[in-house]
Length: 395
Image (tube, rainbow, N blue to C red; front, side):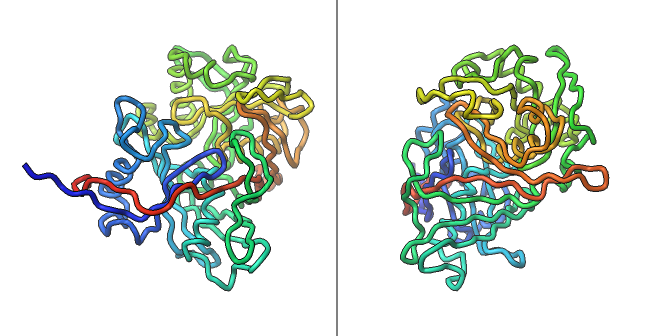
């Protein structure tokens, strides 16, 4: 009996923010995978090691968490005044499914450096020393993101003293600007898809909650922590070891997606795992982060915990951080109220791994709130580069 040989695909394994993923140049993929479709999905599933009923992704590059089961495809941009097109695929761990419905804000931090190193940015735009401004077109959400990547002696500088809670070692700071991050596409319309900054969300067999439903960075459902029986200082084990709690969060997510107009029936939520996110918020209080670091009440403005792909995130998704910043900037959202109220240009929030600061510019125009820009700092680093190998009959 004969078996197909393995094939090699050029790839780079990178950390971006508090996530890791496998990065590809579009034209390095097998020709059949250079267009969207089943072949591309099957290749990425095999690269990452999904679906894995053991939940470990042992036979692939994935790390068996939502933060490490990710893929990125980059190419020279087809958009005017942009350098690179960025397509993100969130790979399910236990299902044969790649979710293309949203962005990864954390891996965005690595897009600029990969694009520079792989020749996707015109050499004339790269300084010998200084900052290279990489103009990114985020294909999934059809938005512009600007990455400010440090350059030393003509090369991307990856080492530095910038510390990011949720990442063990310091690195070079990469500043990210999310321009016009509110979703004005087919999925939701306005930044607040219901027209309200706070809604009543009825979830059968679970309860009725006050919720802020926002499309900024990534569609997100914010609920008060105490309405769920939490205080906002929870760490991963407090949530992820509670099967009943995870089932409740998934039901909240499904009915929130329905109310936001992201799906037409709650049954569709199962095939849209990446979006929306569910998060719970509380007023600032002291707690101990997962690393053992003590977070003082004066270190933060608000507490936020968010779930990704059905589990509490170990830190904070970059796109959810944009949603937090946008919601905090608009008076009377649940995030804003938990942070003390009033209009805010920036907010420091506490997450399971520590703290993060995010800024947002919000304006009321024609009776609707608009966020023109959200800003945060991240870091990125190449972990390995070369080829990934998969069986030739994987697709």
